[in-house]
Image (cartoon, rainbow, N blue to C red; front, top):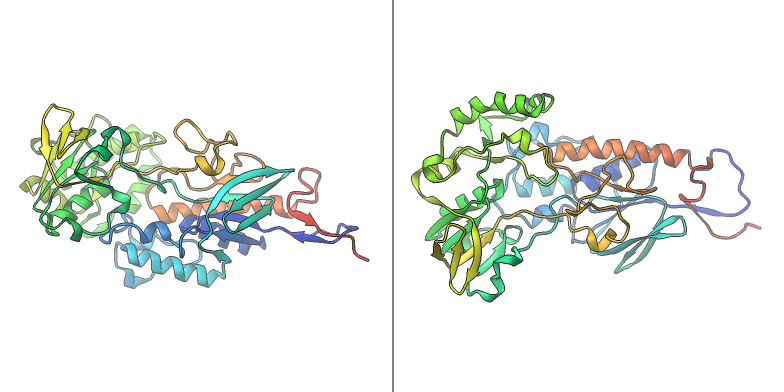
Length: 404
């Protein structure tokens, strides 16, 4: 669009390049489309929702179905109260198709670089030039076994939780799960009921454990109300629920943490509370999952723990968190903090025409993705339709040649 301004040469309108076809990327592209802004989505995997496809089969959303849809499309009733991994993937496929999104799969983005006032997105399938790039690859995109464990010098089979799919490969094995977040606790429960001979849980920092549901109902409405309160007030409000639904786990090695879930979640790199089903808590109480100290390193066929003790195990699953892994793509642009997170997020551009969407933890992953995508798309659309103003006249178009 030219808003009536005459041009002396032929021009192509450049689409917004959205990197990542997960919930955030799809929602951003769909919201842009509803505002008349063209967008193309580049996805490294073979289909939409690649990160979800790779997660463990027993994964379920912590938020209820009614609170987990993206803008413009509800999660179907058949997904159940708490949709599972495959339900989310099917929903994202349907969402992309319904919105008519242009998703290019199997495209690895190597670098985003400034190219004379525009952005050049360099990939293994050629380069895209554009006036606007949206990075929506996810806060939890990359995982690795902590290098300080020296796992490569050990005979123990060590994998990251991002590579764990089901308990079958661990049948008859003694397994140590490291990390007591939602994923660590759920994977430990999955292993304990899936054929592992023994399951231990290594904990460095005791988690804030919250129930996935109360009386069969999702806790989303209450959580969203509590988030409007000061963190310490919200922590105090949720404490009776923790005592009632979870109880005191000090006797199994999980004392109550010094800070509540809302205070902790104010920190940029904190993953938030561990939200689990009652059965996981029952496994901890019964000793089916045994809590041990933090891992110091792996040595031979033993795991050395921070309290000076050691364990002989067959396998270690490192549920030690995931990182955005943005450094290869944008690390030379000065847009990341020391922890690898974008310094500006969502509708606020890190640089003119470069935005990072949904790189902060919030309850209700899909709903949060939709809200942030909608705000970002609105900000981009304002720039797009005003691009003939002096602020950025050339970012959104590429001149081809003068017409005869």
